[in-house]
Length: 305
Image 1 (cartoon, rainbow, N blue to C red):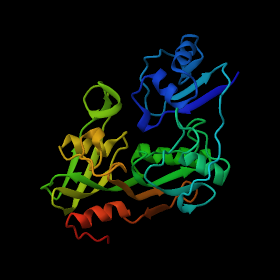
Image 2: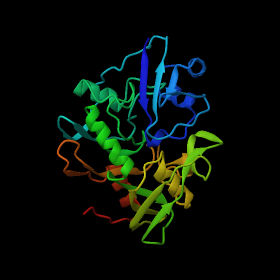
Image 3: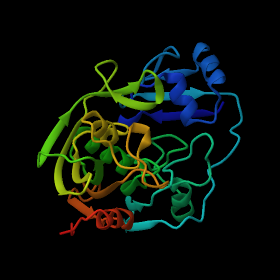
């Protein structure tokens, strides 16, 4: 009998079990609910209910009868690789590229491009997310580390959990932020009115901490250097909206629409301890052109150091 094994990461916690599996497998939600009732879905080795809310590091296994309808296919997509060795790949993801396959898009993702290049990646995070240790949104650009094997994946995931993997972003937000720096410490959970969104809430939420520094104040917006101390889904977007300075071009969280290219957010810095050498490595990318152009058009003079 076919079996799927998935380990829940930080970004997928606090989601109904049946919803989580419907989003991360090719099985329908109704078939998942049936399998759960039949005891063929185990969470950490135990039977549970469809309504169970996932937690970080949960180990989920699913035994099913249905034939998987598709295989992960390699794709000829141009990707910007900054570094590669036998354990990891560091990618500068472009805007508009989905990180991993999901219902509705199985063939044109970063994972498909990496399979075409590497052949195989770690499989800790399930069949449809090979190598994916952490993610950034489709319309956010910037740095990601991909694991080529399970040992590297486990060590990198532990660093994310222990907050020893560091990520920084360039971010353009609406309005003028008066303080030169600040910290937003507000728990994030699923929005009860829209499960495709997150929100600041005390109900079924997880700790979320975001630090920011003002790099430049423009005519009606502010350029920030943002440091993630935790890794929740849409964290920067939710936190900036929470303090009434939503990310530009992010209408999902109240940001003003500039164009149709997605939120003005770029993961420019990534640092982690290499899983084989135990040495800290750092990677940095230049500010993307779409952000530079906006800054110049709005009277800015910011220059990267």
